[in-house]
Image (cartoon, rainbow, N blue to C red; front, side, top):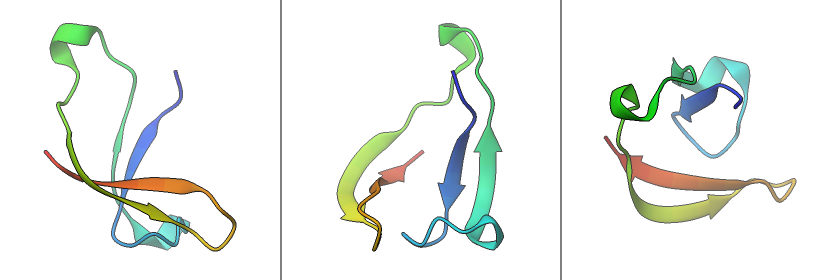
Length: 51
């Protein structure tokens, strides 16, 4: 599994990253609740989530 990043906006630039999460066993994974969806100009999907 790839690393998951938390971004400030739906731009997906490296300087917009707030945090990164590595792959861990299921018991130690962070839990996210999806509240909204957004799409970048290139069509990549992003989710607005709360931790």
